[in-house]
Length: 278
Image 1 (cartoon, rainbow, N blue to C red):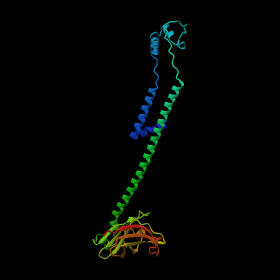
Image 2: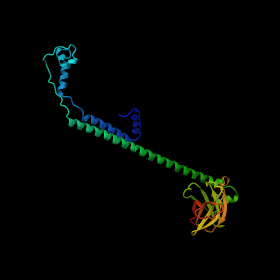
Image 3: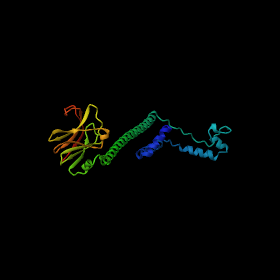
Image 4: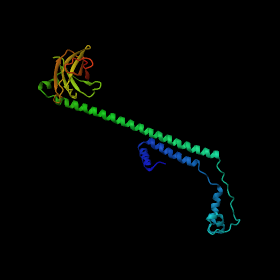
């Protein structure tokens, strides 16, 4: 009962999804069974009359057996080999009403199944789309991290001293994680157990506004301390910055604060957090 374009669409979906194909085939079988249930079997007398007409097709008897409007010469009817007429019982009002109720129930059932298919396809399509978007985002994040790690050693080549720091067993390097609404920035923080000096390499922190600057703060036993102001420019990315010294830091926090700020509450945004875990 669908238009041709919708029939093609249903067939395409049925080829793609086995569950849908099963439902379509089941509906077709139900339609065939429905037709069989209400098929009318001709009275057996009809067959006898037809065979009589065929056998006497070219004879006057055969002409008389035909209905008046089908006779070739319209001869005068004679009382010869007549077949008693069979009266068809008229369908009563209640029976006819019952048939229409069954038909209406079948149509409603088909509509409900069709609505279920549409809901299933719409939900499934949204689910696949959401999964695809999450997969693309995850793959993008993995690629960025791989590029970051592969370029890290190659980028830090400012001096022989900095090259030695990367291999110095006294220097502990940790990668900071994004915090809150700032998940994308990336920095690597180092702490020298011998000299107590702190180092930082910026990879993806955004350029700060003109009235703000990044600070690196250490937290030890719940007490924060300033470890230095970060220089964040396009030319500084990938270079080791030498900051202040600190004794056994437990964690590092990269903050964005107004210039001249000392970490006052309400004016500090946390961008990166790293746990030393010594």
